[in-house]
Structures are given as structure tokens and as C-alpha cells.
Length: 531
Image 1 (cartoon, rainbow, N blue to C red):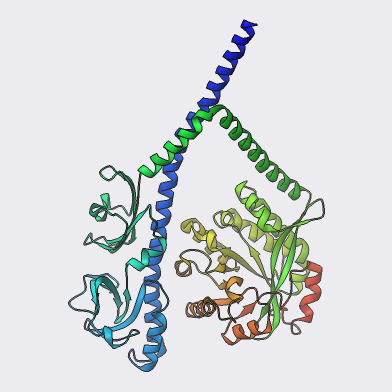
Image 2: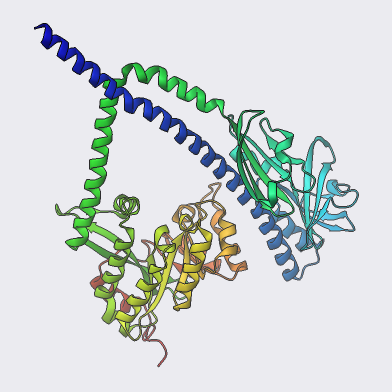
């Protein structure tokens, strides 16, 4: 009996020790992971600040372009009206100005800004952009502002407004000049040395500042001009890990087994979801619906968007919101995209050959946009359909444009095939304006979240109209999603929008239904193409 008790005790002790080993190891890994997460969070904040700064530069370029192309003199009634419109486009922009000889001639803020500037600009960049720092607004002595000017047109900026949307109590944020090494905007406790020069001409740094015991990320936003910095105390990691250890280690055996069981269950669920999707691919359970796209000026159907669905073995139809993330996480998304193109060939080859001017939109995932294989898949689809392959449009979301170098190469290769590229759900992500100036988009799709408020008194009711104006300025065609009422259609038609999509025109339908739908909503020979 004693021996059995001794053996049981030894087994229990060994089991407890074995259970504690992964717990201690997990603590070490958790600390390492927490450190990486902190740096990733700081990276994200500096990128967001970069997007804010670049959006100001893009806004200044648009201001100058519109003012110079309008034919209005800068300080005429029409010119001042345009200045006032641009003065409301950003949280950080307080007024738009026209300068002559370093003095304010007129502004969107009225005559009280006439004594705003004194002296020469602090910085003049190679493109002629002048930056006035430490500007004082009459009657607001406690704040300092910045004026960015090019060819007389300028924006009065409150630098703190550029970082205010990202302020957090546990993070210090700042924007500084890489020439003067002085902060122009700051939130939280920043060290002056963090505004110092970058080592070896680098444009990005992440490091642990021993003196302040802080994790720091610095990023050059505009070479020779502005840089962003974000920092957080390392103690926040130590505090979190200490709390974790105090409660977790005493319960090592039980908690370790529970966590293992949960992890095991989650792993099984993930792999089972992947296996289920693979099964769906093998059993041809994925299918396409097609939602019509109408040309608003003529109110005729000019194309459709291919929408992927999954009909489960139990008959239920699964939306892509549920299985596309599984495909992306498990590395199956390119197989899914290939199946979409195969289904397009299967569903619509005869129809597209008869109607070579019909536009068909296909959505690509972020992984697709970063893979050169995608170009070959599109080319194979066009070859399979044969002569009169239709006019294809590839739709990309802002999330898919983050890896700029690889994505830009794929986008250019797609356009080289004669396929147009549209940016989908515009305005719902970060740095949207920067994407428009980087990628050669043909069509800008306005998200339905802006459409539903366009004919209301909502605070976002004007967003869609500003996006339309922006697209027109950049020479892009526009497509508005989610149109459900004649009033919405008429509003966007009057604003010069090219295309509309929504339940007003037609719900998603099968290929057979689309083939019957198109002749009823288009003019004779509309899609026949050139003879």
C-alpha cells in the first residue's frame, strides 16, 4: 500500500513538473510575443501618422490643381468658396490660404488670418513646397501651427490634430522635423533625443531606449522633412507578465491541461474547417451568383459582379464572409480564386463570346494580389473563353494594397492583359488617398455604407459626394454600391457617377438568370462590340 502511495505520489509529482515545464516556457514565449506585439502596435501607429501627413500633402496638391484649373482668381468669390471647401476636409486642417510674398492674401477663415505669417519659411523642399513652422494664429497664443505652401496655395495645419486620432494613454506619439530635429506635434511623454538624426541614413528604426526604459519606433514620413515616432514603456510588458505569472503558475497543472485541451480543440476545429473547405472544392460545392451593374446615364445593364457562394451538403448556402477568412488563413485562397475563374468559364463562355462588351468583375484577395501566379490564371481564363472574352474588371480592397511593391507589379501586369482594375469598398480603410495616387486604378467603387446615408441628414451624408468629386479629379470612373431607391440612383446620376449596383437594379442571380436578364435591360447590340 505504501509503495502504491509512493508510486502515485511520484507519478503525480512528475506529472505536475511536466505540466509546469510548458507553463514556464509559455511565459517566456508570451513575453517575447508581447514584445513583438508592442513593436507591431507602434509600427501601426507610425504608419497611420504617415498616412495622415501624406494625405495633407495630397490634399494640398488637389487644392492647387483644382484652383489652377478652375479659372477663378484665388481671392475672387469663387476662389474663396473653393478654399472654404478644402478647409473642411481634414481634422488637422484649420484653414486653406492663398499667400503672396509670405503674406496671407485671402483664406477660408476670413480676414482675421491676414497677419498670420511673418518671416521666411523654415524649410523649402526640392519641389518648391515651403513649410512655415511655429506659426502663431492671432488670438490663439498658446498653440503653434504649421503652414504648408506650394505656388501660393497653402494649408494651415494644427500638427497635434494629425496625431490626435491615434492618441492612447500608454503611448507617446510625435511628429518631428528631420532637419531641425524639433517636435512639431506631440502627445504623451516624449524624449527630445527621439527627434535626433537617424543612424546611417536609415528611414526606419525600432529600439529599446535604456534611459527611459521605453520601446521606440521611428519612421521617416517625408525624406528631408517629417518623421513620426511612437513609444511605450517596457514596464507595461513586465506588469502584465507579472500578473500572469502570479495567477497562472500556482495552477500550472490544471490550467496547463485546460489550455492544452482548448488549444487542441481549436486546432482540430481549424483543421476540420480547412478539410471541409477542401472537400467543398473537390465536390464542386462552390458556385457563383452574378449581381448586375448598370450604367446610370442610360439606365442599362453593362455588366455584373461575380459573387462566390458555398452550398453545404445539408443544403444551406454559406456566405463568403464565413469561409473566405478560413481560405486565407489556411493557404487555400488561391485554389478558391482559381475555382472562381473556372466557374466563370463554365457559366458564361457562350454568353461572353456573344457579348464581348459585357463587363464582368471578379474579386481578388490580398494573397492573390501579391502572387505573380494570379496573372497567369487570369490569362488562362481569357484564353479558355476565347474570342470576344468580355471586358474583365479585377476588384481589389484596400486591405490587399498594403504590400506595395509586389502588389503594384501584379496590378500592372493585370492591366497589361487589357483587364481593368477597380478599388473596392473605398474609404473604409487607412490611407485611401495614398492608394489612389500609387496604383493605376480605372474604377473607384464607393462602399454601400456611404450610399445609405447619401439622401439623409446623417453626418456622413456628404462623404460619398466628396469621394465622387475626388475620383473625377483623378480621372477615374465611379461605381456606387448598395443603391436601393430611385432617389439614390437619381442623386448619383446627377453627380456624374458612371455605374450603379444594388437591389434597385437587380439582386444576385444565377448565370442562367443573368443571360435572360441582360437583354431585357440593355439596348439592341449594346454588348456586341466592334464588328
